[in-house]
Structures are given as C-alpha cells and as structure tokens.
Length: 443
Image 1: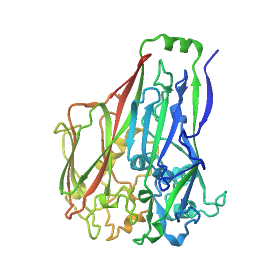
Image 2: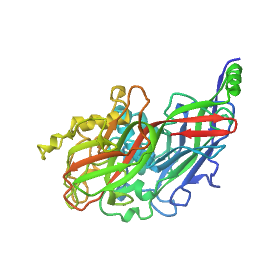
Image 3: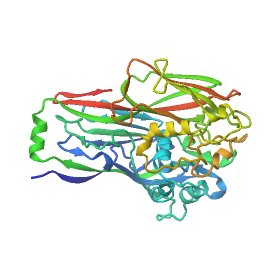
Image 4: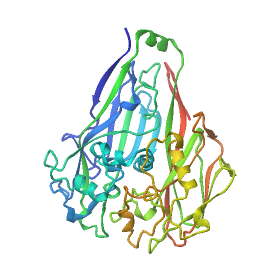
C-alpha cells in the first residue's frame, strides 16, 4: 500500500450564527483547527476561500456607488483584510509563526513576485486585485452586478507565510509532528482597508467590509505504512521551515538609525516598506500604500541619498555605503538600481524571480501633493517602493542575529516634521523538534 492524498474543507471554529465575519460588527478573528493526525498537510495547497462584500451603511444593506469615492488598495485586493496571521501547534499551543502587518508584507511580496499578466488576469478573479485603481473600484467595491446581486465577490487566496510557502509537507502527528495546527487570522480595521478617493470621508463613516461563507481548503497526505512505522519508531523528528517575522518603528530625521534585536539564528534576508505614520487608520489616505519617503505639507519627495545595512554596528553584508543616484542629483526621481535590486533580492532571490511588477513607473520618487492625491493614482497598481538586503540566497543556512542587532542607517531629504512608519519583515529558517512528549521551536 502506498501513500494517498485526501482533500479537506474546514469551516472556522468560531463561526457566527449567520456565517458572517467582520471587524466592524465585532468578529475580528477567524480560527481554523486541524487536529493532530498521522498524516501530512501539503503546505502549498492551503487556501482561504469565501466572499467579500463592501457596505456603505451600518446596517449592511446599502452598496457603495462610484460617486461615493470609496476605495481599497488595488495591489492587495482581499489580502488587505488580513492584519495578522498566526500559526500555533494545536496540541501544545506554541507559536510556530506569527506575522503582524501581514497585509503590508503581502504588498511587497506580491509586487516582487507577480507580473502584470498575473495582476490583471487570474489574481483579479482569485484575489480581487487589479493594476488599475478605477477598475478595481468598479469591479469589487461597487460590484452591484455580482452573481448574488448583493455585491458579493468570491475569492480564493493562499495564506502566504514562511511555513506555507515551503516545499516540505507539514507533519500533523502528535508524536512525530507538530501536533496539529491552529490557524488564526486577525482582521484589519475598516479604517485601514477602505479609504476615500478624495479628502472627503463623509461616505466612509459607516463603510465596512464583510466576509461570508469562509472556509479553509487543503490537501493532506497519508504516509505509506512503512514510512509511518519509521516515523513512529524515531524518538525525535525534525521539521525545518521558513518563517517571516515582522517589526515596526518610526523615523523623523534626515539621518535615521534603525536598530532591531531580531533574536534569530538563521536570517536569510530583511526587507521593509514605508508609509507616513499619519496615514495609518486614516480614512482620507491609503494606510496600506508602500510609498517612498515624503515630506509634510506639499508631499515633496524625501529622497534617500545613502543607505547602510549593519550587523552589530558593522557594515554587513555589504562592506560599503550604498550611495544612490539622488545623492549627486536631487532632482532625479528614477529608481536607483542598487536599492531596487537589493529590495527584490531580499523578498525572493533575484535570480529566482521569474516575473515581477516592479518597474520604473511604480518604483520611483514623486511629489505626492498636499493631500497625497498623486499617491492614490499611480499607474501599474500603485507605488511599489521598499528597501531590503539578502544574506543568503544559495545555501539557505542564513546568518545569525541571535545576539547582535540588525541595523539600517539612512541619509535622506526629510526636512519636515513628518514621522515615517517603517515595517520590517525578516525571513529566517526555524526548526521544530518533535518528540512523543511535545515539540520545541528553535529560532
């Protein structure tokens, strides 16, 4: 007898009586349980499916119209509603991976790893994303001609995290695996998902999104008897997986120094994206945009002149300062090839990127305008700006930051009092040691 595959469909363990979930109505958590069992789950098969509806009123009866000017981030689509993703061992309750600001992480990940053909094609059907902001608004938010005639948009998205992007199947056993999985999704506030196309937020005061008919689907694999016998006879089994960890900090200086104590022993890369701190949970602004640094008032560009990545205070892995083209030409608004390549290389090994939507139109500096009106209409899906550095794209063994801090030194033209929010995402390798008595997560 050989191994065989089964298909599972799981409903949330905390589903409401009407089957609807929303941050606005006090159901901000979605929880799925995959109990311990002597089988594997195929990581790449995990999908979150359901229906998304945008409502204008508190009673969830009035659909928005184009004149209301309600929008959401066109690069993210339905991914915008996931604020946190946490994966626990169902048996022991130990956290194996936790990603805060998951929607912002996805903005960088999707920009680097998906092309415009993906963007305007199948991901519009599955993730409700579209590279044109007006097309996304009309097709998703004001979708009065949906199949249910109630503005419902069906979606099917992967839950992107280090563990679920791995190639190795996840062992669910309570004796030779992780002891089952508990997957928790924290929904994002409506004020950070929806925003106004203008500075007038009147139509958004009660606007909110709603999820319905939510399920988790996946494939599980039952091992062959001889493989199962071998796994059960081992006193210790290991499961190695990638993990993404998030951090947050603000800067408000032309000479900014960022330091993070990662406490991770196998760091593969780190990347970050930026937005003015005042835009977060602001109905007049897109709080999930990944903008370059900008100044207050006119929204003038605050170009990066120099960037240095450090490990324990020393330049690493680059032994030199990254001087951008803007250092000698402040009026140059084009992408700096070193900065852009480092960012993409940190998200996914540059040589492994088969397709991307990062280009000179959406990775550049610009004057956003006093109300950041230009930042809302950038073509090719909005700004895709970010910074990053890769440490190991070949061996996957990583660099230790267990006892030394990760640092970034930036010299930029930030000349006004305008705090910039920095969201850092660190890619690392972790290991789960499994014994009949429990598991241990080694970071």
